[in-house]
Image (cartoon, rainbow, N blue to C red; front, side, top):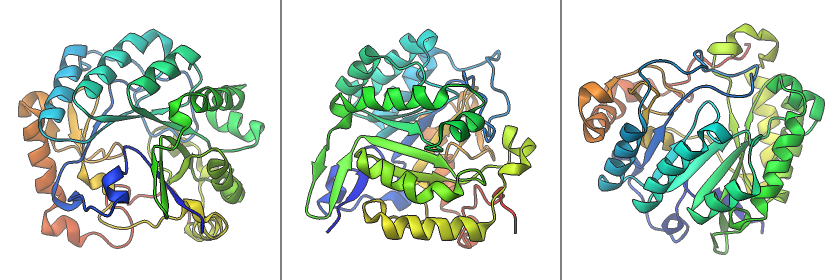
Length: 324
């Protein structure tokens, strides 16, 4: 029987051993978005201010947030941008990751991998980091078209191979049914890659990685690229076939989503639920602490009226960028 691949940081070893984690009433994940600038200009990017701006979080503030997260018992730091693994911000990334490591958090970094070096990968591996690579197509021309960067496919594939040569490419733990790994391949489903869902899922399995599908978020550049729009019917059928033919990647979308157990702090301190939530509930600088931010998030997510809006689609991304 095929073993289902699960990602360290989004899943945990004790889960594989049958121990329950109280996702429904706990903040398990801290997502930090220290900046939104990036060296690519992906057609579907939902960020709208992809440049450095006045008033962004200082390194001291970021380290303090992570330190408090450790004290609160948060399990995982999700580090997203923008692009996190740029060489000119590498020292900042290192200090944030080191604080997470010292606090006992698992760090999961989302990256295009374009500027990753062997030295960077080794350092990340030694600090218990899991990596999520953008893998939107296995066709170089389609991949480059989506990223709007010539040679982007080759640079990401190179980074994947670099990471796999470190402990990030090794299985963390397994039992008779599941494997816990440190590699995630993320795909933003759209009209240009819907025919590749099966092969993308198989590619992830063959590389010892968990595969995750993301829906388009109708913001930023995605709003100006209607050609990416995909019918829910076509997306669902492609996903059904991908899961059928790749049992190692089996997963179903359920509410409450695991990332409802998350507090996200954006580059100027805005507080939301998951990293794609723009219905902010405050600012950590005004709230005064990460604990206060967590309390506001829990009050929102556990509110009966909010739960009543769950109708089979994510209430945070209810405005899916698909055609009827």
